[in-house]
Amino acid sequence: MKNITHHLASLSITAWVGSLWAIGYLAVPVLFHALPDRQLAGMLAGQMFVWAGYLGLICGLYLLGFYVSQSGRAVIRRQLFWTVSSMLLITLIIQFGIQPVMSDLKSQALPVDVMHSALSGQFKMLHGISSIAYLIESLLGALLVIKSRR
Image (cartoon, rainbow, N blue to C red; front, side):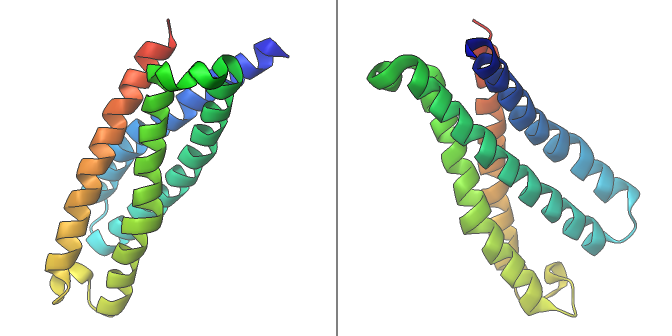
């Protein structure tokens, strides 16, 4: 059983960090480059981020549970615990704080693309905050991959 929990932890890290990097820095840029309709590309990108966010929540919660089960109360002194906790917090903020507001702004702007509406300034600000948070989460994910291999 111990091997299974360790393997699931490794798979959780791989799935979570892999999805962050593959979606945010590969799939989404390809969408905006390949699709002539930026509104469609944005809608598809948003859906990818939502699904990746749910994957991150599942993986992050498993990893926190795994680290607590491995170290007990001493877990609060482990860098991996704080790295996962930070990533999970960022995921929660994006998923349930920023993303719903951005989605609401898109709906309010219809039938016009939000980027061509009076709400574009607000949307751009939230998009910028979300992008910076996503970058920080991605970099923490790289740290998680590196540190978990020890």
